[in-house]
Image 1 (cartoon, one colour):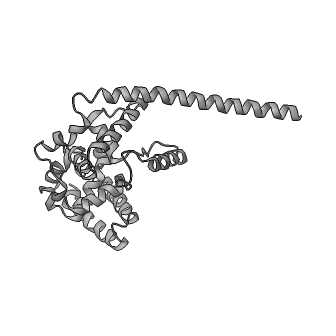
Image 2 (cartoon, helix red, strand yellow; image 1 turned 135 degrees about the horizontal axis):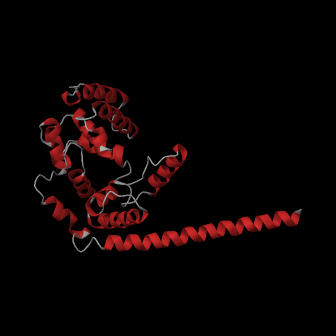
Image 3 (cartoon, one colour; image 1 turned 135 degrees about the vertical axis):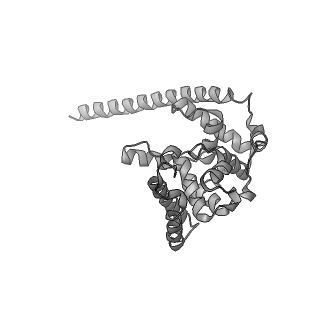
Length: 248
């Protein structure tokens, strides 16, 4: 009996070792593919020149022309550890994996703002492991050459807000007929929630979903101590009263 148990233990150990070797080999292959994919993007637009190139585009909006509420809302809902990581956040990745396993979904991705910027600038939206690896390399390189403020500015000037609006300037104009600096706190919170799923959350097509998403943003802002619960409730009432959410 003991011999059989020992044999089963040895088989289990060998199986685990084999599984680890397979995972290591697969990780190496994906890493090499991702590195090649990322390096292929650099001759056309090097990370070292990314901010200079993007900030020269018409309508590029810097942080001094964006309300602090919008900055706080975006960081709270998209990447609460933005100031702490260097492009890739292992804590967020582990948290996302645990959430996905627990909910049996792929709802959480664990991507930082820098990774999302890299994806939007260098790669397609198609999901595959090699592209994800390339995104990691790109994010790390961007963080070496750009400040956090520059990364945030590039992110909010290139993301899609739905209804044909790319970047915070187009979104402010398209939804509220304002410049970013003129946005109210309620409008800032509403806009901060749209890029997660712009087609689904666009106030023009799905006002109810946009309102629900704004509550997620407010909850994250409370968790990050950017708002009190009372302030969040007041803002939610203001958001619900926005003309852009009125049913037609």
